[in-house]
Image 1 (cartoon, rainbow, N blue to C red):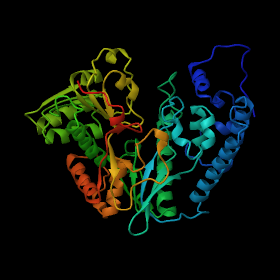
Image 2: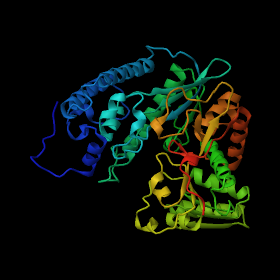
Image 3: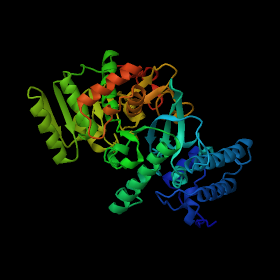
Length: 475
């Protein structure tokens, strides 16, 4: 084990101060060893167990007895090692699943090396990581094979859904705060090769080990896998992007927020941050359902111009404004949908002086585009598009995984992309799956399937908390 030398005295960085505040060991700054180098697309059980041993040794050396002498610490080591071995046994076919799969919901992780917001979502499976910094948490996940995060309730035929981890990471693409333009994989062709390998390895695991006929793609997976078309046909598994379920839930969530008094002035005027696949489809759906004024922003001038022109042609009597300025959308609309993957800092100059009081912001981004506390401190309300499982027997209710308070507020609450794949599997309507950009027709079709199996809009919420518990009254 090689440790990084430290000077006799130095000023702690903001990252180290945050580690101290949280009472965790900054392992990432202590160790220099090739086993910790991120090798994306490679899965190595022995290497993961070596990393675990090193991590445990450093925590015992540097946590000053706060945790490492406790029985809980020893239990967490054992649980983490058992989960690593169990995951590789499942992936390698040495251990069979208890039940055959009815659907799979495939997700990457939101954990990245510079953002603490979602770092605890790994604690259920790797409990030893709660003693270390967020960079080490991400680096520990690199090298894991595709694995089962959780199972859902059984369907009438005795099968069940599986939530599955695809080992893809934001740090592959995006760099640190110090160098935000450089991710771990700088070469574009290398990146495509890793994406192709990992998503196909994950699809093959779902089909061959779990018997799953259809998988839904969560978070950024539709975008980085060309709407799932990167998955090879010979694997024999259906895919669906989840975008139609998301678009449908955005609509239902805003309607519920309007009914409950969270939207000043109603939904005749709505703003959209992002004109990509979700943003355009949602904007068109609202125009079709009666919204007569929208402002839509995007930093891609060409894409934005095309979207605005298309929507104006389809809805000539509506007022449609395109802008490169996200702040304009926030300033001029009381109901705003965010559908981008970039975090916005409300303390930055463009946003600092906007009056947000009484505004309703729906954030479809995961990780989130907005910090809930920042918005709420300025009088706005933040919601996520979340559905809830009303199926007989809890067919789409997770067994144990609760995102440690950073996801849906209940294990029976589901993402739109999660609801989409479950509804398709439950009804057998595989022809409704999506492998291209969603349209309002797709959203209406998936909503009908969700209604059929009783997957409906949930109580308004964000980041593991229901809005009724944190409500900012509408002025």
